[in-house]
Length: 125
Image 1 (cartoon, rainbow, N blue to C red):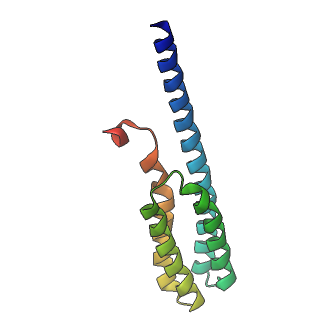
Image 2 (image 1 turned 90 degrees about the vertical axis):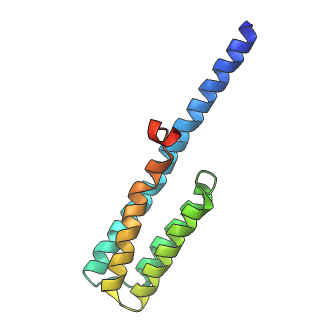
């Protein structure tokens, strides 16, 4: 009986450690991506953004998403891909006003998406 209690306690501790690591890791990845989107948003707002700026954010996201696919559903990742591609295409065509709307959506996604996967009572039930 003591062994089973110790095994159960070890499993609970291991799960808690994994949950804490996942939350910290996902928040850090989205924090870096959010900062890049904010920078791009400022450049688009000033109408100084160019193709390379959008490409830099897309490259940053591609590096992040390879690792995030372990923790997040693929639909959420493809949703970000879609909005980022739309924004980059509009920046390439120099349609800055339209790109601002797409980047605003990306800012909200990068702010709210990590919170949807944290260990909170509202996410469990």
